[in-house]
Amino acid sequence: MSQESSNTEMLRDWFRTCPVISRSNRFRIDYIDYLSENPTEYAIYAVPSVINYEMNVLGDEIPLPVQTINFIFASKESYGADIQQNLANLGFYDEVVGWILAQNALRSFPAINEGVVQSIVPTLTAYPAEIGSNAAKYQIQLKLTYRRK
Image (cartoon, rainbow, N blue to C red):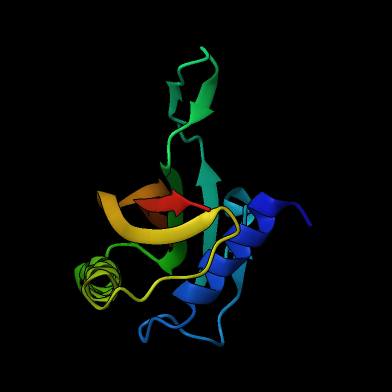
């Protein structure tokens, strides 16, 4: 297993502790496009992240001590003409975001291989990224900030 995969697995395990995320539903990693047509499923996947560098006195570029990893948390939810269901889907994400912010206040973060997590914050609000006839893929984007080991 690659280091990136194990970090994503650690994030997945952290998300699994969120009380509004059902432990009985499938929770995939890096397979967002393959969520089944049957709601409800979750997924987490990495998106491109900039690696920040500085130049030392010898002219070598070295990674800065604080870095970020971007990722998306998504789910496949029931969707359609029922306004209450669609509002409930967005309400689910409000609760997930609230939980993430509470974890920041408690400094309760997953362990990752690269260093010590300092924060996990939403960078995009929830939205239906893909809509089908009876299900939609909703997602939020998050930024994990960590101090390198």
